[in-house]
Length: 175
Image (cartoon, rainbow, N blue to C red; front, side, top):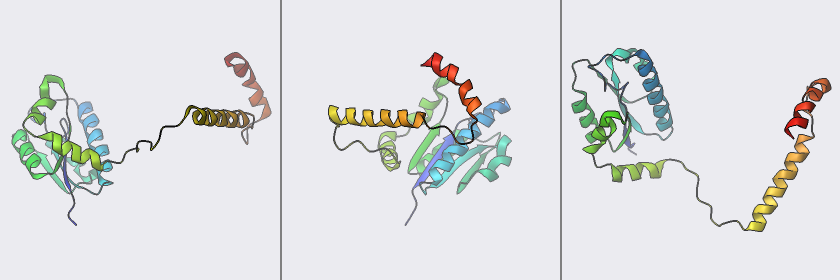
């Protein structure tokens, strides 16, 4: 079975500013986002493509991706970006909305269909099958409230009674 391909792109660490000087703190933040998203998509068993700025290429070893392209100082990252977009079935872009950067990156691609396919693969909470009646909600609320009152009377193992009495004043003040 062939894996689905996804191109995960974070603008700062992916070479979007390859011709500009930017602070290392932006690289750190961008790389952290890129790495956490890659880890999440690895759980979905997808073949991952990504780009990385040449100034942080030493961090490439901690990215668990199948395909990594380093963007050099003189590289045209838009050309490399568009080539990878055409190659992959899904695209995940993290980019600033200022200066229309995100809009420009997504403008030339038809994302609606690909977005819906990708979102349908992500794990999610299912909608409830039926709506609970008022009486059922009242019953569950009363049960949880009773459980809370019972558990609030149980002392925590290992806590001294003198320490518990010190919090008695807070209990009295806060209700």
